[in-house]
Length: 173
Image (cartoon, rainbow, N blue to C red):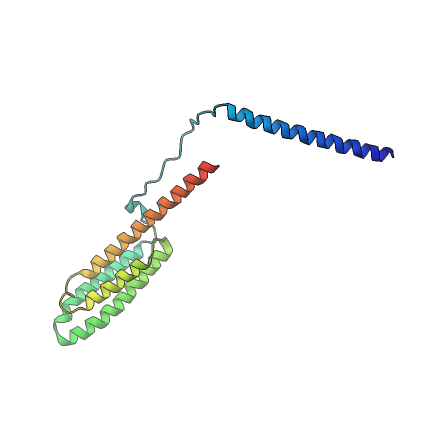
């Protein structure tokens, strides 16, 4: 009986302590609403530059390899004047574009910034290079450069999205 009475008293004390804690929390919240928060004078982290060329990564030399292959392909276009050279140039064009595609795929998978528009640009460049009248222009090097700039632009957009999400996350914290 004495033990039971002791348990009831202990429960009552616990409930009283919980109520007091809840009341303190409510009072603290009301007090916090009334007081003005202190001004945060801590130095902020410097924001990263998100220019297009600040997005260059260590995995980007594969784009340089693709650019060299594009240059070789554009030099190969000079041999298109002869009949035998024409068939050889078309075969080499397709093979070099496959190689360039793999290099771009490796660069995009390692550094981000890919998309379907890059693949469409590559197919369009292949079609332009196979056309007989304008294939002597250095369109392949221009295409690889344009693809690389597109990848850098996409990386910049992704970095800005991440920075914005990070800022929103910190505002909730």
